[in-house]
Image 1: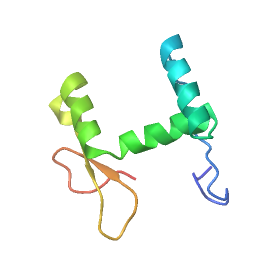
Image 2: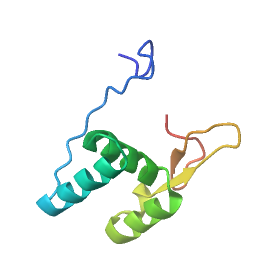
Image 3: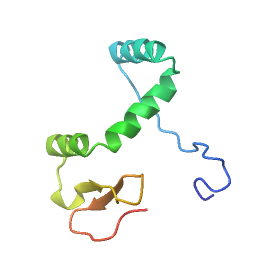
Image 4: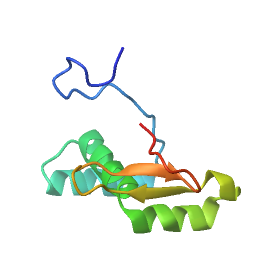
Length: 94
């Protein structure tokens, strides 16, 4: 199946996230405050973090082991989506 093709922008990829009780409580409270479902809000938070170059850099500085696998987020002037490049590559991942 080709992602997004004929799906009307429906999300088809699922990721299981395990939260501690205290973070689940925070997520539920914030979701209530934002009038969102907790899973919708968690997805939104993940999307924003993955598109934030500073957050990506901080995570890689803290957890990255292999320099060859570091990613560089970039955004083309004519596209709204953030893409990732492997360090040293010149074409974007699709």
